[in-house]
Length: 274
Image (cartoon, rainbow, N blue to C red; front, side, top):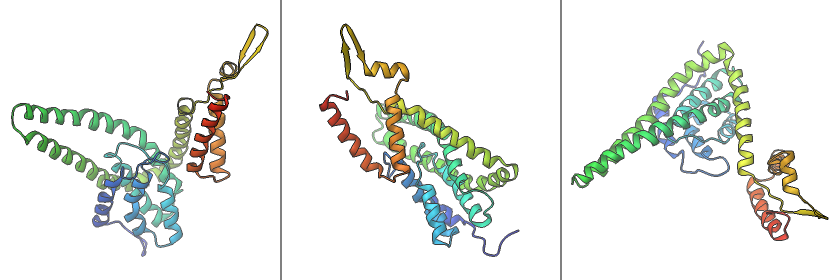
């Protein structure tokens, strides 16, 4: 049943989302990647479907979480998120954290699809044709053809992502809600996120202790001993400390980055870090 105060997105609203989505990479950052660009794309939706300032604040906070995928296909989760925000604003029949879970679940598959088909296949083919035209002596025809083709490809993918993502998202949310699949997606997306983040720890957080203890003819390396117990355990412990400080003590990640740099420099010069 349609509510009297129901807020529905119009084509004009979706066009605003479409143009705002172009900023998806304009504010890339090392902390949350494309989150600010995604939030910029969602602004017309949030401002349209929510009246309560607290609801708007919560929606903005939802979309300021970490987000990263191929920039053209990012329009798909933008369109789906627009549909989910509209549904939640009008019906309140699912947990709003599901919106973030669906975005997280789409990031990886869409990144692989966009990078392989668009960046890895379509772009090199179009570039090859443009280079062939230049080699054939056509002058500026090749570069102009490349720009036009890539523009059509980029705008086309983004248009379909926003408009079809929104259109299909409305029916998907309804189907997911009636089947109970939303709660399952939320659970699986949370597990996947922890697994992915955890898998990067030993690769990105490396702590090496070069201290060795010698007793007679026996030399004990602290680093080798720790690696035999659990490879990367120091990096894991340091990551756990950072997580605790950010989530429990509300310490700024920027502050922790600088403190880590200072600690590393002091540790190397003092000899207890390598």
